[in-house]
Length: 239
Length: 304
Image (cartoon, rainbow over all chains, first blue to last red; front, side, top):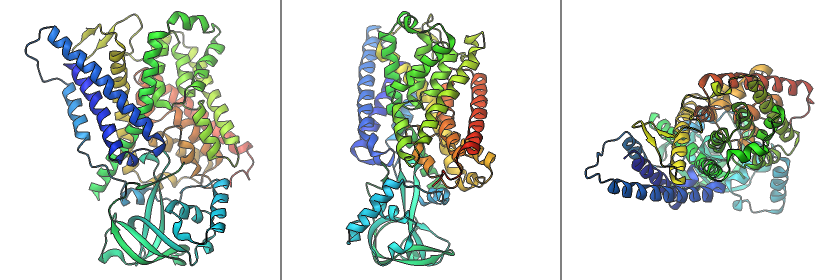
């Protein structure tokens, strides 16, 4: 039974991988560049689990074992694999955001900075910029660029110590949740009446330069702000 | 608050496991195929009898394997059974996560401002791995370096659950046995790494960035704790530019792939804890020395 349970566990691990691939939750566990690789891994595990498991069942019958003892140490492994399917897969919370928000953020290469500058120069309509592109603009270290620019984007709410401000936050992932790095923009809005920390919101607004916690930052002044469900692409991905 | 922490802990644990899974399957498959189709006689034919060259040969295997440390352990296990000495395997497991094509490319891309970081990483990683392997080759009783559970090629596969001899030598059974052997260690390593990631504030670790020696040690501790895959750690390390010296960043980029919680627990399936402790100490000292040397000799205007 030991081997049979191990083959069942292999199959369950493979099935779990396929399940998160199909429902898109795999994007909260690993980078998109690895998803097909991971999917193929799931298929391989299911195939090996099925071939080995069927072989074991045949062997058990061939050996003429009429009654099988269900209890085995490996049953615990099977149960743990079953539990995987009931774990709600979510993005990291604002709690981890605060823990990792250490001023040691991302760093952009010169080529990435040149691309950002070129996009800024050729696109007057900044509402087409996505969150990652705005983060790239932030890392040009020239806050005045932001002044008066239109912003449309989504993120989750993280608290700040300054009243009437919150951080519109996202995580940038290069490989998996382990290396998720926080990025954010300050939003000048008292969210406490309508929203709470970790809520996902979509914001339309305009940037201005304000002093927050003693430093000048690009700050979004929202014209509309609405609560949304956690998006499928909760993490921003670095290639 | 605690619920969020628990949820994040589970997500980091699962993230590590899912990200490592394809590499483990790749490594175990390579190991099983190697067993089936490559005989120890063939290995012996090509392996040099000269200690230095045989360690170089072990090191060069990594150049052809585009996997991180997770995939190397099952393969290392098999290479010993095919006739490689434990000291050569030490060189292999330490060098393969650095001397592989993907790691070089990602480091080169991340530090494209000065590709010397990628070259130093490759070169220094190789030299450290070679040095540590050669150092351990001086131990005459090579088998004494191996874990008690490491079975020799002359014994049968052994199922420890019911202490029965396993005569099933099918590819599927070998895959299953090796997979779970590494998988359980990965799970324990991922659990520990997730605990550190969630419950130890990162700014506490980064408080020590100003002192040259301490900053090197701090980034090495961080590399040990976060257990990031070597194929992408260059992007993570890039975020320390400006806050930490280039020597500390290189120590992070070399020490992390060689020694971290996850890989140490997986290496535990091959080597004795005492061997692993000695390897860790030697690698750590060499990485500190490398970090300090780079900081001394490297141009001060290197960083952005």
